[in-house]
Image (cartoon, rainbow, N blue to C red):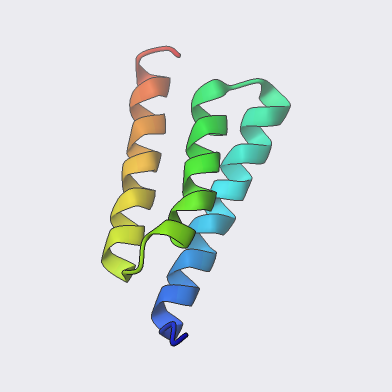
Length: 72
């Protein structure tokens, strides 16, 4: 299996941010951060491209931002 280094690095970065969101959401009992963290940790295993991993990570962060702005 040949996985490009760029995909590994991008997946690691997105997963690390997702893990941070997950820990924060768990500790503070915040559902949007918890769900976004889980999604960001799972996305690199499911998507094969740097572009799609990045888009999914940014969409998750955007979803958290919208949830926080609307008061959830």
